[in-house]
Amino acid sequence: MDSVTCEKKIRSRQREYTPAVRVVTYALLGVWALIVLFPFYWMILTSLKSYSAYNGEYIPKLYTLSPTLQNYADAFTAVPLGRYLLNTLFFTVLTTVIMLAVIVLAAYAFARLEFRGKNAVFVLFLSMMMIPNELVVITNFITITDLDLRNSFTGLILPSVTSVFYLYLLKENFEQIPDNLYYAAKVDGTSDLKYLLRVMIPIAKPTLVTVTILKVIECWNSYVWPRLITDDERYFLVSNGIQEIRENGFGRENIPAMMAAVVVISVPLIVLFLLFRDKVMEGVSRGGTKG
Amino acid sequence: MRHKGFGGSLKGWLYLLPALLFLGVFMVYPLIDVFVYSFEEGYNSASQTYFGVGTYNYAYVLRDPYFLQAVKNTFLLVVVTVPLSTGIALLISVGLHSIKPLRNFLQTVYFLPYVTNTLAVGMVFMILFKKTAYSDGLINLLVTRLGGNSVDFIDGPYWAKMFVLCFYTIWVVMPFKILILTSALASVDPVYYRAAQVDGTSKLRTFMRITLPMIAPMIFYLVITGFIGAFKAYSDVVALFGTNLNAAGMNTIVGYVYDMLYGDSGGYPSYASAAAIILFAIVFTITCINLLVSGRRLRR
Image (cartoon, rainbow over the protein chains, first blue to last red):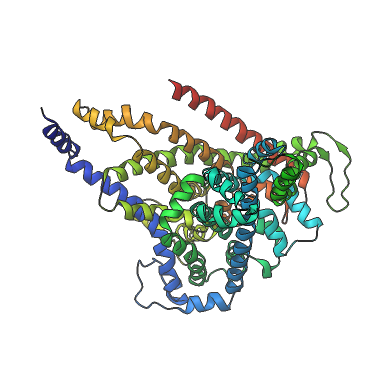
């Protein structure tokens, strides 16, 4: 039998799924898609229902004929949602930028420079990856409290900067950059810092983008540390803000306004994800932790 | 030629300095300190004094009914969600792998829970499952349609609350698992499938004998990370039941640690430390067992 007919035969066998199997497959995938999407649909739908309409429905309706944006107006006026968002944005940007600066320098030292004690320090760094946050958060809480940094951005940001795993990812990437480039730059009299900024960072840009996206997601959703360290509403991030809104916000029963706040909080990350879908998924499969 | 000697050394340490500072202050020192705290008896955070050194904190925590409740909740959550979510993720990934149209779209959809704020979306789940004076809620509507009795999943009986928690946890952890498994499935060399097809091997047998062994390392990886993640459950529980988890009877070990540290029941860093170390010991032991078991299986 020549290879062409053989290949054909295999091809035809590849499509031997019976229609029943197909139907079951699509049904399974469809059901899970429904389970994933429904909460999103429900939050948007509820946020568009008026307060009275929502509370008048003993049997919740799956659609609304008179959508209103009043809840979104309430979400920004009745509770300081705008402030929560700005706080979170500020916290996210600053934490990410400081982290990037710290890990770029450290990754460069590990990947490119030679110095005594390097391997020992690197092993120490690696072993830190196994330490769960729960173990160190207690002392950090006391440290920040003792330094009188509760309810401040410094207190929020400083302990959130350390990310050994991202440092590790970046160091691996830096090491792939050929040595020749470095020696050539050295011959030209380029300083290390200049070499790092002009050559290494542009080459390692994909990894830096991945790390940035992962850190932004992490910061935007962080809840535990901000909750421990802030009890002043002026410093709340969105996670704490939404919890505050739930417990003391619009009055417990104004669910539509609460859902409007939930939508506003969820949208930025979903947009970020849809824009950088492949980057995000690649980054998470390399270094994701949630799950 | 690479830099050697004192000048080069100094430069290396200089580049490392910021990272070392952050790591030292916020990871290494706390790590030592948490053990110190856990053995200091009667620590007073206001005066920073303590009576003596010993294992009283551990004894207290292990006898605290709230802690035992938290341990029970956490173990239940782990035992239910880890196998279920891994199994469902495997089913979905295999399904996803076998279709062409819609695959990209569905992958995007399935990933959405990963990029959402756990606290915010948890509130949507709360509303769907909650029974109020105004409405039984959508899920209860479904339950009664199917012939069951409506039940308050948020403030009601223990099993109902546990059900919502497990359901939401699975919803949250699925994207990561589906992502890892679909890329594992895609990386199996098609040559093996061709060979099996030439031999006329059935689909099921191909899956059991080729696909499963090939992706087994990734499944074990997911089980291990799943165990670790589920043991640290906290923010999704808060999202569903609010911050007063002890009152709801739904606290987790991590929740117990934070409650001991802060809030209305807080101010006891020693108890919190002891509980955190117990949690770490449990997670560490189970991870080791997992690694041993998977190591043996994979070698076979």
